[in-house]
Length: 155
Image 1 (cartoon, rainbow, N blue to C red):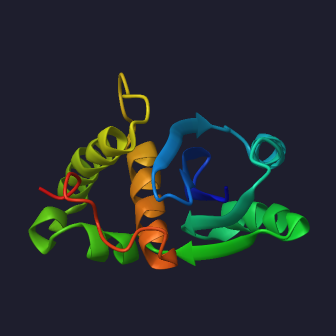
Image 2 (image 1 turned 45 degrees about the vertical axis):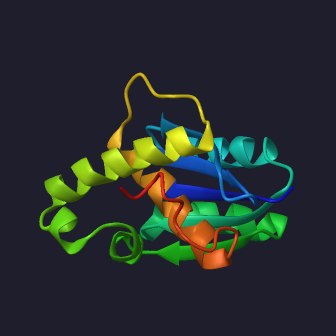
């Protein structure tokens, strides 16, 4: 099975892994703290996912370059997007009128994805992990791993 890794970039990073069945396998939030720890952490994380075919990054800058460099070294495709791309496809306009409203609705939608996928339920869900989940959902729809949003996700 192939896997797709979705990343909400930052020193505090949201990470979500999807299988080619379009379901979320796992998600987490990780605080790397420094760029040097981020560089080591990226390599370690990618070592744990042998069948990784694609990384989707939301954001840019130095942190994105670290992920891109390591992915290129391993022959993994990288797609860079902005939040507007996944929000436009997954959230209604009224659900994204402000940053705080968008984050709240991203949390709600991410929890539905977790439930639909059968992934471990969170005790708490950080906004970076919630956004990584939705970045990944956007990506599996774009790749055709899912042809449409499952009914259980969009109520």
